[in-house]
Length: 306
Length: 306
Image (cartoon, rainbow over all chains, first blue to last red; front, side):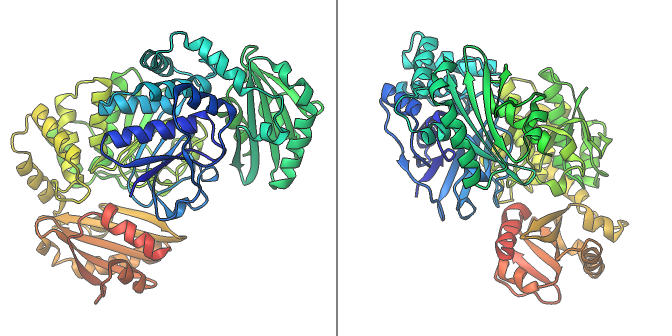
């Protein structure tokens, strides 16, 4: 019986690419493993898999009685609903330590780096397994995506070194130019339903008993959102109601300007204002220098909610 | 400000030795770190530190405002009471994943091997840091202790390989003979207060909302406990009352016979009987082949309590 390798709900590129790259590694060292996805691919991930000729993992959301490896998260809220009925063999992640617990020993490769695929590259080196060309391409892409082409404060020298090595294996000469292409696909707005935009990279967090949803859209030019901003604000208000959330934040991140416009609805906006030491006007505020949800948004919000 | 490296409450040899060996490694790679202990050393650990000429870490139990590395556990119940006010930089452990969470990314080196020091040996290799002679001796000792000289089902080939390498560095020719000496010290009974014996390697677990305490005493000859067994049974009954526990188990493990006599008191012994598919008579039962609390006692008990 194979082990399934799965990223978080509402998968981003790192979740999908690390499921594929870790499953390949496990098979290479003699453990049968199958990558799966917990939801639909976003346009960026589709672009990455198409570019490097890899198949979309199968959709699978129930894991009772199965063995699993978890990538790119360690929170129950982002994991399968029936995870407690599965056996967690391992976790590979680069976020804060979440509330998943296990009843047997396991392997955890968790590092404060910019991307799960950077850690998986370390695992290939550890096990002395060669990274195939296509897998190198998607691993490189995921690291460029998560680190916002090295501009995110979560980016470390280990991420940069991993991208350089992987780009050489994948035969990508100008990986920064490739990264900008990828981000143009990522922030494509025309023809996309508003809800799909909001949910494209959306995560729920439990903060001192309150549910806080935080979405993020990254772009190389913030003005692409001008025509849909009002609709985005209406939709996150709807999302707040539907999910019984205390607050919903949506970060519109401009990688070139290096900051984010925060759209927010909530039961008590003074908490959010306190977290960022700012004033929210008409449900929005520009946060200069804020690029990383994980490092610059979640920790101050958690502190403010505590 | 240095980071503190700390093992669990009621420290065993792995908790103390891995605090020392990890702190040394962190300093070697340029991070200031200080090993500490959360309680008194047991006779085995004292024997190990004396043999290899290393100092006893300082006692420290409060860590509010400090940065810490946690070794040999990932459970809040075994960690400092004010851990939520500290910054957890990393965890090195070989147990099931516990309920410690963090609000920032960290490093976790968690592996399903026999001892935390086996993982720390891997970390020395990763960072290309030479293990000094004395540190090699205590790391080897901790692995021999945790794996019951390789007889525990938690022992893996990685543990054996680590001991062989470390013994060579430490200049210990017959490490198995050294291990038997160490276990004789570990199971010394004469002159030891009963409560000290019970607490020598005692851990509390939360099982479906019930507190279950499980202690373990390992010996090379079970008959050493004959003269104190009745007193041990009286004392675990007292311990159950004092700590508001549902059950208290004490494993008297005979490494040569390869099994454990389980002494147990509890509000509902049928749960414990169900966990091990056995009958408890006069508060005790022989569990053949059971050597590991972590792998053979905690998981079936958790399942039975669920």
